Amino acid sequence: MEQLVSGEAAKLLGQARRVVIFTGAGMSAESGVPTFRDALTGLWQQFDAQALATPEAFRDDPALVWGWYEWRRSAVGQARPNPGHLAVAAIEARVPSCVLVTQNVDDLHERAGSVAPVHLHGSLFAPRCSACAQPAEVPAGVTEEPAGGRRITPPRCTRCSAPVRPGVVWFGEALPEAALSAAVEAAATCDLLLTVGTSGLVYPAAEIPQVAARLGAAVIQVNPEETPLDHVAEVNLRGPAARVLPALVEAVWGGANRG
Ligand code: APR
Image 1 (tube, rainbow, N blue to C red):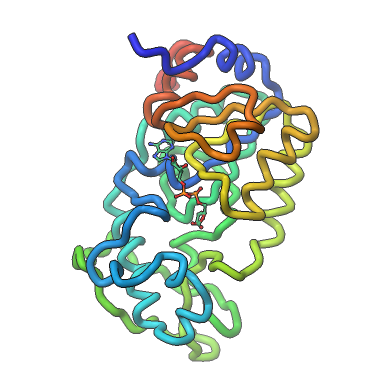
Image 2: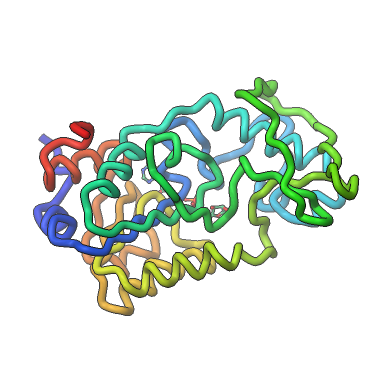
């Protein structure tokens, strides 16, 4: 039987009082949501994801960028939370204090029952005006986008008629202040930080696990691959989130989904 969880990890989580769970794209990989560094397909394959996720790209070709985010929102709408997301919600329900900080722009944590994830990089479900920041309607229901993607002219702001933009943080943009300070505050006062499915390459988000470690918290990393966070973590659990997290909850509390 493959050992997904170490006794040390179970002990650390079992005795933790103030926990931060920090997640990245790998958390949603087993729900079929491609990680940011996965190769792009269809219309997008001629672009580098990082080039599409910038204010300049939106200024130069709003229909291309809006189309890409509608394609991603459609993919997320058709995806489902995986056992890893459910285990995160189970941990939140079982530890005295828990703050969930995510870099993901999908809503799979919320659909798994997590109450108030801190979205450091925004959300696919919070479009706003690109000029006056007035929140805009999210088209209702799960949209069907062609697999290869398509250009879509963004809707106009109902207040100032400027194009509506996706509610995500683009490269070169500052993170939402309230979210960043809530994440730093939680990391600075936690006794355990669980980092799941992030490459730890994109700053300032990647600073969060390091703040926790610097201030004496234990760090557990869940990732099938090595990352720069290996040296920050006290325990590295090498495996996929949807298998490791339920096993961790089982090891500490004997079964994630027993409510
Ligand atoms: N379970 C756990 N981890 C996984 C899994 C899995 N099933 N599959 C992949 N991973 C790991 C990979 O090994 C990698 O280290 O998830 C990580 C994904 O890394 P990135 O694609 O770089 O995603 P992330 O760290 O979230 O990126 C940070 O950068 O791209 C921007 O805004 C975007 O929020 C994103 C940020």
